[in-house]
Length: 182
View 1 (cartoon, rainbow, N blue to C red):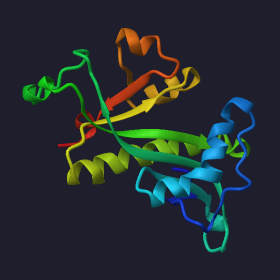
View 2 (view 1 turned 90 degrees about the vertical axis):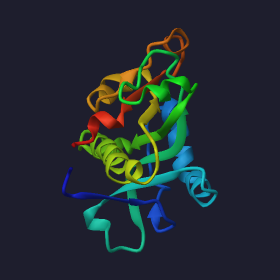
View 3 (view 1 turned 180 degrees about the vertical axis):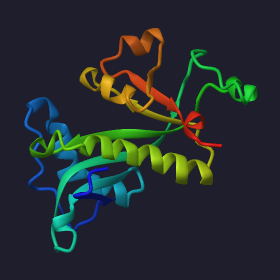
């Protein structure tokens, strides 16, 4: 994890107005953090965590240089993946998951390991907190084509179904049980 940055839950003290995405195609990520993320949090729909530079830690307004939004979800494995250690679970149409709903890094901070830091944070939160408190077997994301290789580095696999292969933003998943050290 880059030592000159830290992660905290999004709050009103965070400066999101300067968050820049660059590409027009990525503007919805900027719109979300600037206009919707706090509402999603206060409505208990999703939780956003932000990356702040350490030099901003004690200031009243801390500039957001990256963020990740997590929410509850489910995954329909469609006979593609068997839960071998619990065959009874394979009877269900869907299984519980945490979803990475959004992950973005300010265009001026790309290449500093912030995306990796956010992904490691999400995996760690799931493995060390969430699965110890509630039943949740999978971490999922709707992947964009240019994010597939990045997601694969963290153990994500493409859900190999016809409908998913034909999707504009196919689902990728990781089995959290395989990440737990016994």
